[in-house]
Length: 635
Image (tube, rainbow, N blue to C red; front, side):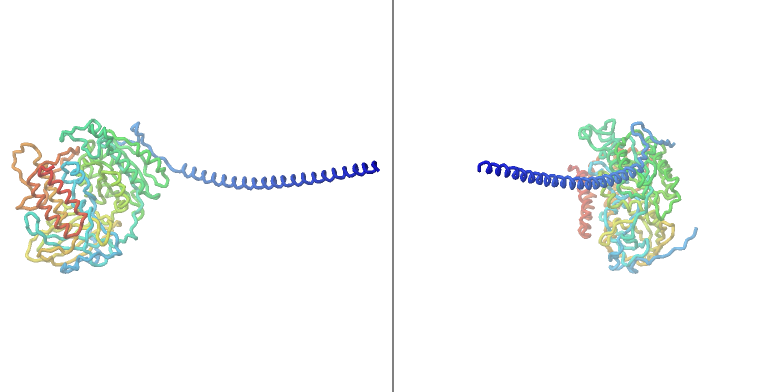
């Protein structure tokens, strides 16, 4: 029995071991299967991820390659070495049929004449020449006596918006409107007659677009550009002698920005306004002129490299402005036959305008600019620093298509470019003539045009009108003011205008009316023009008298142009000392006579500001108060 039981137990044991063996095998197979499955799917996912990553990498590589190819195609065409003073240098020793637009004038110049222009025309017009009086303001701020040419009527007008008196819709390129006034001189109380010419255009803001530019910038890199922009480089009068490099000891300690620094930064800002279809070239000049960058398309130029090169430019040498002008003009040899409907040729000068080498005479420089304008190459001058010589530039901007601005800070220049660059480079109306026919009046003086000295008793001439901003029916700098001389007992006036557009096609208009002889202002535009013109005349006469009486122990009796008997007279012409452009300073000094004249005028001016409800004009009030304080010795 025992043996049988033992045999049964021994038989049962192998069965149990076999069962556990089978279970173990099954579990191993399951684990292997699971591991294999995970490995398979992981491999598959990795392969998919690798394909995606390869596609991304391939796409990125293609874009990078395209970018490199595009970058490679851009030209770094700079060819001036500042250290080596390299570059390509150049030393220089019949009858017409007018189409008349509808006249913008009321037959009797009644009060309805001053109604605002239609709102659908958002672009006005303003004359060329000076576009600001910044140099005048900055000199007063620094206690220097400005040059009489630092302030001009057209420059001051462009600081303000004018009611042009347009009473009907304008559909032409240029539609003049007229407003009369009879007003008494605030000092002499004599009656004076005026007529404003409103500069209206039928071009709407949506229609206006500047043409592509072939732009050559001519940059002054002469030694005077290495001085502070708020000091006089050639100063030997005020007792604050400058160091050899144009700085005072205080400037060196304060690390004051130089005119060269400001010019370089301004040029970089200017480049930002250009489009891919524009072309840019750059000429530098000191004693000689150098081609720094040929005239090439912006879209094909490595502009970032160009800007880097510009910011590295340093000043040195004399000032041969005529060499820069001539080399700049030469860059247009291949672009004189451009389609004027597509492209504009313009030279922009950045300079302190103090030539001392080469042909520095007015005739030489003006002649070069004049010949360029006749070929359709127009000029813009950007003056740098308080000693910027406006005597010379004022003569040059009388040329067709020319204008100038003055700059005293990078921020100021960027704002100007952002707001006005397209207007600055786009002349619209040329060779404007206004003929006045009357037995009772003649033109005594023209205010608001650089060609004012070319006017006669019957004709007003304006070389160029540029587009100008229009806000609430008022145009920035939008008038020219005629001072009339009474020659008869009647009041009849006939006016006729003629002008050329960009395609040299002629246009014009004519109007007839009677001028009311009683005191009046037919709109605020003519009223503002009169008060601002008197302000400019007062300032010019003061500066001329101060300079003529500047020499100590002058034996001649002092005769003032502004006085109670004659009032604010027309400023006499300033004799230009051709070739002597190294401008030195004269400090503001005491003058009791002009302290009285300014005080008398300030009362009138403030009352006009109140009547015009134009708080922006208060900046002139503050300036006059500062001058009065200096003239009366209250500083």
